[in-house]
Length: 90
Image 1 (tube, one colour):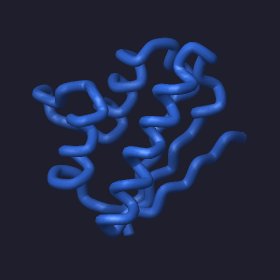
Image 2 (cartoon, rainbow, N blue to C red; image 1 turned 90 degrees about the vertical axis):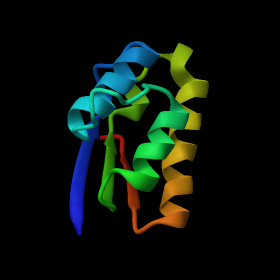
Image 3 (cartoon, rainbow, N blue to C red; image 1 turned 180 degrees about the horizontal axis):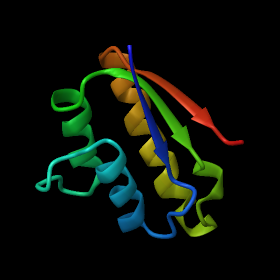
Image 4 (cartoon, rainbow, N blue to C red; image 1 turned 135 degrees about the vertical axis):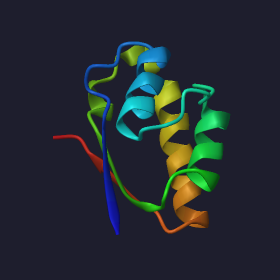
């Protein structure tokens, strides 16, 4: 199983969250940088595997609601495809 590590610990904005996703998952330049586009990538572009989500707890409080939606997007993909989602908040 392929392993992915996505570090959100330095993100301070929604744009920086999507930049981390784009860089660390090696998403194409045309990635739309929103949750719908992430869903499309998870369900049709990225090879399923173990997704290690790092540093979500370090996101600013202003991104709390968005981080919940982000995690929900990953969890939905886990239900449909062969993904394993691990949230590591060390």
